[in-house]
Image: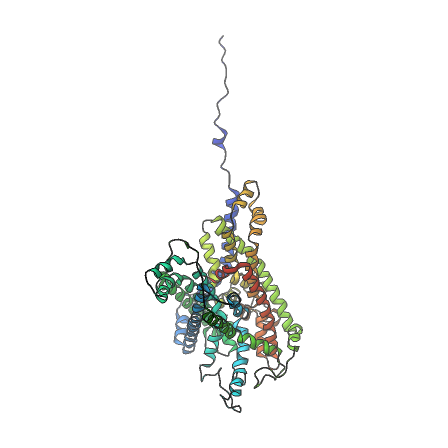
Length: 602
């Protein structure tokens, strides 16, 4: 009988039936991307949406334009909007007039003392104009330093009242606000213009020179069109900043501006929607002017075909011209630090001794003791340290994650994430603060809701601490994102790829490889976040409503509003803040060098 040999059934290759392997790295990355979108959506986009919808919704929840139209029909609100626009325009123009010559001289020429005076250009940033206004008032008052000098040289009658610089006769409070803000903000435009000039290809200028073009024509036809993006980047920040600046007009008692009108209306938003509409108008004006500049000025920018083909040469100025250049830098810097000098002198002046004298007749350090022992002062210092440190930690974590996904990984949707992270530079801080207040009136943050006791500003027992930390974090997030992004762009990803190929997890490679390589950038961005959060004005004035929650800037405002030695204690606290910002800005400048200008760019 013929036997049959049974052969085992053939099986298909195992790989044909193998389940596709899940790329866990992609899962982690997109999960992180979704988490970051959720954070920015909740604490950046939602407050803006609440503010905008609040201006178009009536008490029954229906769409209406009545509140918005009432803003344009109210002469007081229209005057405030016009004044705010004029302040922003004049401040921006004045900053450009100051910085454009300085940036060109610093980039194109070499002169004695250039390194020293170039580093001093950041000095005005060490004191917010909100605090600097205290010093400027001491200098420009009827019996202040300037009037005293004019009386001593015989220009004014020694027995007269002096010139009312802060009154309405000679421009008064309006120009005081403009000058104070311009002297504080011009370094932002300077950093952007010098960065733009440093990236130009000098071969273009040489080609124009060989064709017989004059120095002015070469600048106007070749250089200026190429640096328009840098000019616009800095000018945009300055315009929006000065348009929505709250503290400086408050300190100069100049109340007919939109930010101050919003500030006074903050306690009415539960019953009166007009403050919502006013914030909407301010937001739309800021965005409209930004977009107009983007398309009108930014659209005319020309791009270079490649990076600089030859190294840029710096012309050494003769002694006479070099001395003039040095004096220009020194003069602008001295003018910018005059308010700082006024704050310092006021902090050391004994009560009532700075009257019709150039400097105080008697000095004391008791105000500094009060600034460290007074319950409100010491409490506000502790609060600001706590808020700023927490914001710095959260900013560092979120900023590193955003930069890693957008620069190193280049994940899909990364461009949108990066744009959202930079949005706080374009959205007025006052709008964000108002939006956080609006959040506390909505579920789940309203009183009696799930998080009603955790987030609140206007309730019976307000708890604004989480909102202050969140506000500081979101408002200063662009600094850490730009700083860490610059670090990642400068470092190679080969070491990280090698670690991943050897089996290290993404978290391990980031912690052991990426973070140590960009630590200088992380530190630079973090100290900027910390220092600017310590002296944040808009969020502090609006969100902190009780003494126990006051940060430093709100305490300075409260002290300055009190009679007696209040303004001297406020000045002493301003000096402490000045010292802090000096240390942090110098440290950030040393760590980041010329990359520091990228932080102040939309």
